[in-house]
Length: 120
Image 1 (cartoon, rainbow, N blue to C red):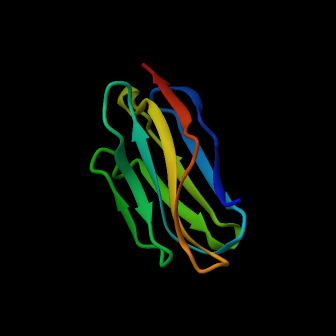
Image 2 (cartoon, rainbow, N blue to C red):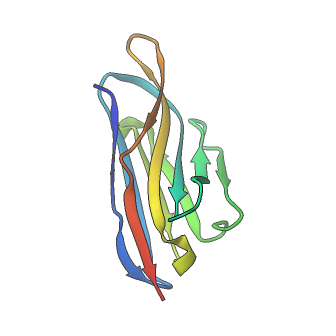
């Protein structure tokens, strides 16, 4: 079974940092684009950051300069380092990955979500 498992959420105060991790497991031949999305209560899910398998990154304007996305292809893992957190960053954060399995099928995967809460 191919799946994504997230970790690293929690409760922090404004100005503090957190790092989220997301590992893809199962019969994965290659991970392609990976990314993080978030959904705050009463709002639509929004893109936070993405990274290609060539390490090209893209960020939402609201997190540029504060968040850094990175990946370890050997571990099929993507990270999100979040610095200078603000209360408006409070949301459930979801990992997303496009992977190629050993049957040469493209799979679009989502993690279960991890809560990030930033208090003022």
